[in-house]
Length: 179
Length: 219
Image: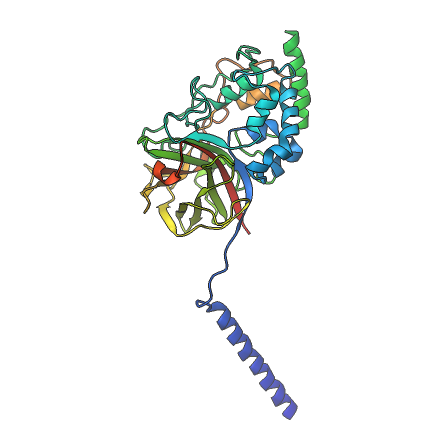
Protein backbone atom coordinates (compact mmCIF):
# COMPACT_ATOMS: atom_id res chain seq x y z
CA UNK A 1 0.00 0.00 0.00
CA UNK A 2 2.79 2.36 1.06
CA UNK A 3 4.73 1.34 -1.96
CA UNK A 4 1.77 2.23 -4.11
CA UNK A 5 1.55 5.68 -2.49
CA UNK A 6 5.25 6.27 -3.05
CA UNK A 7 4.90 5.28 -6.67
CA UNK A 8 1.98 7.65 -7.00
CA UNK A 9 3.97 10.52 -5.48
CA UNK A 10 6.92 9.86 -7.72
CA UNK A 11 4.60 9.77 -10.67
CA UNK A 12 2.96 13.08 -9.79
CA UNK A 13 6.37 14.61 -9.08
CA UNK A 14 7.40 13.41 -12.51
CA UNK A 15 4.39 15.07 -14.07
CA UNK A 16 5.17 18.24 -12.11
CA UNK A 17 8.77 18.21 -13.34
CA UNK A 18 7.67 17.61 -16.92
CA UNK A 19 5.19 20.48 -16.61
CA UNK A 20 7.83 22.81 -15.22
CA UNK A 21 10.30 21.83 -17.93
CA UNK A 22 7.76 22.26 -20.69
CA UNK A 23 6.71 25.61 -19.23
CA UNK A 24 10.26 26.88 -19.17
CA UNK A 25 10.72 25.60 -22.70
CA UNK A 26 7.74 27.47 -24.08
CA UNK A 27 8.34 30.57 -22.03
CA UNK A 28 11.93 31.50 -22.82
CA UNK A 29 11.41 35.16 -23.68
CA UNK A 30 14.38 36.13 -21.60
CA UNK A 31 16.74 34.02 -23.71
CA UNK A 32 18.12 35.53 -26.95
CA UNK A 33 16.79 33.64 -30.00
CA UNK A 34 19.31 31.38 -31.69
CA UNK A 35 20.60 32.74 -35.00
CA UNK A 36 18.82 31.17 -37.95
CA UNK A 37 21.06 30.27 -40.87
CA UNK A 38 20.27 29.77 -44.53
CA UNK A 39 22.45 27.59 -46.75
CA UNK A 40 22.96 28.16 -50.48
CA UNK A 41 20.87 26.15 -52.97
CA UNK A 42 21.02 28.04 -56.27
CA UNK A 43 22.94 30.94 -57.74
CA UNK A 44 23.04 32.92 -60.97
CA UNK A 45 24.99 35.89 -62.27
CA UNK A 46 24.90 36.06 -66.06
CA UNK A 47 22.13 34.21 -67.88
CA UNK A 48 22.58 30.58 -68.92
CA UNK A 49 26.17 30.07 -67.73
CA UNK A 50 25.50 26.95 -65.64
CA UNK A 51 23.03 25.72 -68.26
CA UNK A 52 25.36 26.06 -71.25
CA UNK A 53 28.88 25.61 -69.91
CA UNK A 54 28.68 23.27 -66.92
CA UNK A 55 28.44 19.50 -67.53
CA UNK A 56 25.64 17.56 -65.82
CA UNK A 57 27.88 16.21 -63.09
CA UNK A 58 28.90 19.70 -61.99
CA UNK A 59 25.60 21.57 -62.09
CA UNK A 60 24.68 21.24 -58.42
CA UNK A 61 28.18 21.97 -57.18
CA UNK A 62 28.44 25.03 -59.47
CA UNK A 63 25.32 26.42 -57.77
CA UNK A 64 26.89 26.01 -54.35
CA UNK A 65 30.31 27.43 -55.17
CA UNK A 66 31.08 31.05 -54.29
CA UNK A 67 31.95 33.12 -57.40
CA UNK A 68 35.55 33.80 -56.37
CA UNK A 69 36.23 30.04 -56.31
CA UNK A 70 34.52 29.20 -59.59
CA UNK A 71 37.46 29.71 -61.98
CA UNK A 72 39.71 27.30 -60.08
CA UNK A 73 37.05 24.60 -60.07
CA UNK A 74 35.28 24.99 -63.41
CA UNK A 75 37.58 26.57 -66.02
CA UNK A 76 38.56 23.25 -67.61
CA UNK A 77 34.99 21.96 -67.88
CA UNK A 78 33.77 25.25 -69.29
CA UNK A 79 36.49 25.43 -71.92
CA UNK A 80 35.68 21.88 -72.98
CA UNK A 81 32.01 22.83 -73.32
CA UNK A 82 32.85 25.88 -75.44
CA UNK A 83 35.09 23.93 -77.79
CA UNK A 84 32.56 21.12 -77.98
CA UNK A 85 29.81 23.54 -78.94
CA UNK A 86 32.07 25.24 -81.48
CA UNK A 87 35.21 23.25 -82.36
CA UNK A 88 36.19 25.99 -84.84
CA UNK A 89 36.28 28.67 -82.14
CA UNK A 90 39.15 31.11 -82.67
CA UNK A 91 38.08 34.42 -81.15
CA UNK A 92 34.70 36.09 -80.80
CA UNK A 93 33.16 39.48 -81.50
CA UNK A 94 34.79 40.82 -78.34
CA UNK A 95 38.19 39.60 -79.59
CA UNK A 96 38.48 37.06 -76.79
CA UNK A 97 40.37 33.81 -77.23
CA UNK A 98 38.77 30.72 -75.73
CA UNK A 99 40.89 31.10 -72.59
CA UNK A 100 40.03 34.78 -72.30
CA UNK A 101 36.33 34.16 -72.95
CA UNK A 102 36.15 31.40 -70.35
CA UNK A 103 38.19 33.63 -68.04
CA UNK A 104 35.31 36.11 -68.16
CA UNK A 105 32.37 33.72 -67.87
CA UNK A 106 33.87 31.35 -65.30
CA UNK A 107 33.23 33.86 -62.52
CA UNK A 108 29.46 33.89 -62.73
CA UNK A 109 28.61 37.42 -61.67
CA UNK A 110 26.63 40.03 -63.59
CA UNK A 111 28.72 43.15 -64.08
CA UNK A 112 26.72 46.35 -63.77
CA UNK A 113 27.44 50.05 -63.99
CA UNK A 114 26.15 52.44 -61.36
CA UNK A 115 26.80 55.35 -63.71
CA UNK A 116 25.51 55.61 -67.27
CA UNK A 117 23.62 53.17 -69.46
CA UNK A 118 22.87 49.65 -68.28
CA UNK A 119 22.96 46.94 -70.96
CA UNK A 120 24.09 43.33 -71.35
CA UNK A 121 25.52 44.26 -74.74
CA UNK A 122 24.33 46.95 -77.10
CA UNK A 123 27.31 47.39 -79.41
CA UNK A 124 28.77 50.11 -77.18
CA UNK A 125 28.16 49.00 -73.61
CA UNK A 126 29.45 45.54 -72.78
CA UNK A 127 28.22 43.96 -69.55
CA UNK A 128 26.96 47.06 -67.76
CA UNK A 129 23.85 45.32 -66.49
CA UNK A 130 20.94 43.40 -67.92
CA UNK A 131 17.66 45.01 -68.97
CA UNK A 132 14.45 43.03 -69.12
CA UNK A 133 14.39 43.60 -72.88
CA UNK A 134 18.03 42.65 -73.58
CA UNK A 135 18.30 39.78 -76.07
CA UNK A 136 20.92 37.98 -74.01
CA UNK A 137 20.55 34.69 -75.85
CA UNK A 138 21.49 36.24 -79.21
CA UNK A 139 24.50 37.88 -77.55
CA UNK A 140 25.66 34.59 -76.06
CA UNK A 141 25.01 32.59 -79.24
CA UNK A 142 26.99 35.18 -81.21
CA UNK A 143 29.89 35.06 -78.77
CA UNK A 144 29.97 31.23 -78.89
CA UNK A 145 29.28 30.61 -82.59
CA UNK A 146 29.82 33.89 -84.46
CA UNK A 147 33.60 33.96 -84.70
CA UNK A 148 35.67 37.17 -84.76
CA UNK A 149 33.15 39.17 -86.79
CA UNK A 150 29.98 37.62 -85.37
CA UNK A 151 29.21 36.49 -88.92
CA UNK A 152 30.18 32.83 -88.74
CA UNK A 153 27.49 30.12 -88.49
CA UNK A 154 24.64 32.57 -89.18
CA UNK A 155 22.03 29.88 -88.56
CA UNK A 156 23.25 29.49 -84.98
CA UNK A 157 23.87 33.07 -83.84
CA UNK A 158 20.26 34.18 -83.35
CA UNK A 159 17.14 32.33 -82.26
CA UNK A 160 15.07 35.06 -83.95
CA UNK A 161 13.03 35.65 -80.83
CA UNK A 162 13.83 39.29 -80.32
CA UNK A 163 11.58 40.36 -77.50
CA UNK A 164 9.24 39.34 -74.73
CA UNK A 165 5.72 38.06 -75.32
CA UNK A 166 4.20 40.90 -73.26
CA UNK A 167 5.24 44.55 -73.14
CA UNK A 168 7.14 45.66 -70.05
CA UNK A 169 5.89 48.49 -67.84
CA UNK A 170 7.48 51.96 -67.88
CA UNK A 171 7.27 52.17 -64.08
CA UNK A 172 8.08 49.96 -61.10
CA UNK A 173 7.94 46.93 -60.95
CA UNK A 174 8.59 47.02 -64.74
CA UNK A 175 7.72 43.35 -65.42
CA UNK A 176 4.44 42.56 -67.15
CA UNK A 177 1.46 41.16 -65.24
CA UNK A 178 1.20 37.36 -65.18
CA UNK A 179 -0.62 35.36 -67.85
CA UNK B 1 28.51 23.51 -95.13
CA UNK B 2 31.04 20.89 -94.12
CA UNK B 3 32.04 23.04 -91.19
CA UNK B 4 28.42 23.30 -90.13
CA UNK B 5 28.00 19.55 -90.29
CA UNK B 6 30.99 19.01 -88.07
CA UNK B 7 29.59 21.47 -85.55
CA UNK B 8 26.26 19.70 -85.58
CA UNK B 9 27.85 16.30 -85.08
CA UNK B 10 29.72 17.65 -82.09
CA UNK B 11 26.56 19.33 -80.82
CA UNK B 12 24.85 15.96 -80.84
CA UNK B 13 27.69 14.51 -78.79
CA UNK B 14 27.40 17.45 -76.40
CA UNK B 15 23.67 16.99 -76.10
CA UNK B 16 24.18 13.44 -74.95
CA UNK B 17 26.50 14.59 -72.17
CA UNK B 18 23.97 17.08 -70.85
CA UNK B 19 21.12 14.72 -71.69
CA UNK B 20 17.65 15.42 -70.38
CA UNK B 21 18.26 18.93 -69.10
CA UNK B 22 15.91 21.61 -70.18
CA UNK B 23 18.26 24.37 -71.21
CA UNK B 24 17.10 27.83 -70.35
CA UNK B 25 18.44 30.91 -68.61
CA UNK B 26 18.79 29.37 -65.18
CA UNK B 27 15.41 27.66 -65.13
CA UNK B 28 15.63 24.17 -63.59
CA UNK B 29 19.37 24.26 -64.25
CA UNK B 30 20.42 21.58 -61.78
CA UNK B 31 18.87 18.46 -60.23
CA UNK B 32 18.94 19.65 -56.60
CA UNK B 33 16.78 22.73 -57.21
CA UNK B 34 14.49 21.46 -59.96
CA UNK B 35 10.85 22.23 -59.09
CA UNK B 36 11.90 23.73 -55.74
CA UNK B 37 11.12 27.20 -54.38
CA UNK B 38 14.89 27.74 -54.47
CA UNK B 39 15.10 27.39 -58.26
CA UNK B 40 16.25 30.70 -59.73
CA UNK B 41 15.25 31.58 -63.27
CA UNK B 42 16.89 34.96 -63.87
CA UNK B 43 18.63 38.00 -62.47
CA UNK B 44 18.25 41.46 -64.03
CA UNK B 45 20.06 44.66 -63.01
CA UNK B 46 19.15 47.93 -64.72
CA UNK B 47 18.58 51.64 -64.27
CA UNK B 48 15.23 52.60 -62.81
CA UNK B 49 12.87 55.03 -64.50
CA UNK B 50 14.64 57.43 -62.11
CA UNK B 51 18.26 56.77 -63.10
CA UNK B 52 19.41 57.67 -59.59
CA UNK B 53 18.13 54.19 -58.75
CA UNK B 54 19.23 50.70 -59.74
CA UNK B 55 16.66 47.92 -60.09
CA UNK B 56 17.31 44.32 -59.10
CA UNK B 57 14.89 41.68 -60.40
CA UNK B 58 15.13 38.24 -58.78
CA UNK B 59 12.97 35.61 -60.47
CA UNK B 60 12.30 32.09 -59.21
CA UNK B 61 10.03 29.09 -59.84
CA UNK B 62 9.86 29.32 -63.63
CA UNK B 63 7.62 27.81 -66.28
CA UNK B 64 4.45 28.34 -64.23
CA UNK B 65 1.41 27.80 -66.40
CA UNK B 66 -1.41 30.30 -65.79
CA UNK B 67 -3.51 27.47 -64.32
CA UNK B 68 -0.91 26.75 -61.65
CA UNK B 69 0.25 30.32 -60.94
CA UNK B 70 -2.55 31.08 -58.47
CA UNK B 71 -1.40 28.24 -56.25
CA UNK B 72 2.30 29.13 -56.42
CA UNK B 73 3.70 30.66 -53.25
CA UNK B 74 6.90 32.02 -51.83
CA UNK B 75 8.53 29.80 -49.20
CA UNK B 76 9.18 31.08 -45.65
CA UNK B 77 12.22 28.78 -45.55
CA UNK B 78 13.82 30.12 -48.74
CA UNK B 79 15.94 33.25 -48.47
CA UNK B 80 16.26 35.19 -51.73
CA UNK B 81 19.46 37.23 -51.64
CA UNK B 82 21.00 39.74 -54.04
CA UNK B 83 24.77 39.83 -53.53
CA UNK B 84 26.72 42.96 -54.46
CA UNK B 85 30.49 43.24 -54.73
CA UNK B 86 31.57 46.86 -55.01
CA UNK B 87 35.36 46.49 -54.96
CA UNK B 88 35.98 43.90 -57.68
CA UNK B 89 36.97 40.85 -55.63
CA UNK B 90 33.73 38.94 -56.33
CA UNK B 91 32.99 38.67 -52.63
CA UNK B 92 29.75 40.29 -51.48
CA UNK B 93 30.16 43.61 -49.67
CA UNK B 94 26.42 44.21 -49.47
CA UNK B 95 23.37 41.98 -49.51
CA UNK B 96 19.69 42.68 -50.11
CA UNK B 97 17.59 39.90 -48.59
CA UNK B 98 13.96 38.97 -49.13
CA UNK B 99 12.09 36.38 -47.11
CA UNK B 100 8.41 35.53 -47.01
CA UNK B 101 6.31 35.50 -43.85
CA UNK B 102 2.51 35.53 -43.38
CA UNK B 103 1.50 36.99 -46.72
CA UNK B 104 4.28 39.55 -46.80
CA UNK B 105 7.74 39.71 -48.29
CA UNK B 106 10.15 41.26 -45.80
CA UNK B 107 13.35 42.90 -46.98
CA UNK B 108 16.66 43.42 -45.18
CA UNK B 109 19.51 45.64 -46.36
CA UNK B 110 21.33 46.74 -48.38
CA UNK B 111 23.50 45.63 -45.45
CA UNK B 112 27.03 44.39 -44.91
CA UNK B 113 26.82 40.62 -44.38
CA UNK B 114 28.04 39.35 -41.00
CA UNK B 115 29.92 36.64 -42.89
CA UNK B 116 30.01 36.42 -46.71
CA UNK B 117 29.68 33.10 -48.50
CA UNK B 118 27.38 30.11 -48.68
CA UNK B 119 25.75 30.48 -45.27
CA UNK B 120 23.73 33.58 -44.45
CA UNK B 121 21.68 35.07 -41.67
CA UNK B 122 19.16 37.88 -41.81
CA UNK B 123 21.07 41.12 -41.51
CA UNK B 124 19.80 43.81 -39.15
CA UNK B 125 16.22 45.03 -39.05
CA UNK B 126 13.56 44.84 -41.76
CA UNK B 127 14.02 47.82 -44.09
CA UNK B 128 10.91 47.25 -46.22
CA UNK B 129 7.86 45.01 -46.25
CA UNK B 130 5.20 44.48 -48.89
CA UNK B 131 2.12 42.29 -49.19
CA UNK B 132 2.65 39.63 -51.85
CA UNK B 133 0.57 40.63 -54.87
CA UNK B 134 -2.09 37.96 -55.46
CA UNK B 135 -2.31 36.33 -58.88
CA UNK B 136 -5.77 37.84 -59.37
CA UNK B 137 -4.77 41.41 -58.44
CA UNK B 138 -5.58 44.03 -61.04
CA UNK B 139 -2.41 46.00 -60.26
CA UNK B 140 0.87 45.24 -58.48
CA UNK B 141 1.17 46.06 -54.77
CA UNK B 142 4.34 48.02 -54.06
CA UNK B 143 5.85 49.61 -50.95
CA UNK B 144 8.71 51.93 -50.04
CA UNK B 145 11.11 51.09 -47.23
CA UNK B 146 12.64 53.17 -44.47
CA UNK B 147 15.84 53.58 -46.50
CA UNK B 148 14.02 54.59 -49.69
CA UNK B 149 14.05 51.19 -51.44
CA UNK B 150 10.96 50.27 -53.47
CA UNK B 151 9.79 46.67 -53.29
CA UNK B 152 7.46 44.22 -55.00
CA UNK B 153 6.83 40.47 -54.69
CA UNK B 154 4.42 38.28 -56.62
CA UNK B 155 3.72 36.42 -59.84
CA UNK B 156 4.75 38.10 -63.11
CA UNK B 157 5.06 37.13 -66.73
CA UNK B 158 8.49 35.51 -67.25
CA UNK B 159 10.48 38.28 -68.97
CA UNK B 160 12.94 35.76 -70.42
CA UNK B 161 12.55 34.85 -74.10
CA UNK B 162 14.27 32.12 -76.08
CA UNK B 163 13.40 29.54 -78.73
CA UNK B 164 14.43 26.76 -76.41
CA UNK B 165 12.66 24.03 -78.36
CA UNK B 166 14.60 24.80 -81.54
CA UNK B 167 17.85 24.94 -79.56
CA UNK B 168 16.99 21.46 -78.30
CA UNK B 169 16.32 20.32 -81.84
CA UNK B 170 19.72 21.66 -82.94
CA UNK B 171 21.53 20.00 -80.03
CA UNK B 172 19.73 16.75 -80.82
CA UNK B 173 20.80 16.93 -84.46
CA UNK B 174 17.21 17.26 -85.67
CA UNK B 175 17.74 20.76 -87.06
CA UNK B 176 20.63 22.63 -88.68
CA UNK B 177 19.72 26.11 -87.53
CA UNK B 178 17.22 28.32 -85.75
CA UNK B 179 13.96 29.24 -87.48
CA UNK B 180 13.17 32.74 -88.62
CA UNK B 181 10.97 33.86 -87.00
CA UNK B 182 11.63 31.77 -83.92
CA UNK B 183 9.11 30.74 -81.30
CA UNK B 184 9.42 31.89 -77.67
CA UNK B 185 9.31 28.77 -75.51
CA UNK B 186 8.59 30.94 -72.43
CA UNK B 187 5.58 32.69 -73.95
CA UNK B 188 2.56 32.45 -71.71
CA UNK B 189 4.48 31.30 -68.61
CA UNK B 190 4.98 33.04 -65.27
CA UNK B 191 7.57 33.29 -62.53
CA UNK B 192 7.50 34.22 -58.85
CA UNK B 193 9.27 37.56 -58.86
CA UNK B 194 10.93 39.87 -56.37
CA UNK B 195 11.79 43.39 -57.54
CA UNK B 196 13.79 45.92 -55.52
CA UNK B 197 14.63 49.44 -56.67
CA UNK B 198 17.51 50.90 -54.69
CA UNK B 199 18.89 54.46 -54.55
CA UNK B 200 22.39 54.12 -56.01
CA UNK B 201 23.78 56.07 -53.05
CA UNK B 202 23.09 53.02 -50.84
CA UNK B 203 25.38 50.82 -52.97
CA UNK B 204 28.61 52.64 -52.04
CA UNK B 205 29.87 52.06 -55.56
CA UNK B 206 32.59 53.86 -57.45
CA UNK B 207 30.95 53.03 -60.77
CA UNK B 208 31.03 49.27 -61.22
CA UNK B 209 29.51 46.46 -59.22
CA UNK B 210 29.32 42.70 -59.63
CA UNK B 211 25.97 41.16 -58.77
CA UNK B 212 24.75 37.62 -58.28
CA UNK B 213 21.54 36.17 -57.00
CA UNK B 214 21.39 33.30 -54.54
CA UNK B 215 18.64 31.32 -52.90
CA UNK B 216 19.35 29.80 -49.52
CA UNK B 217 17.43 27.20 -47.59
CA UNK B 218 16.76 27.48 -43.86
CA UNK B 219 19.08 25.12 -41.99
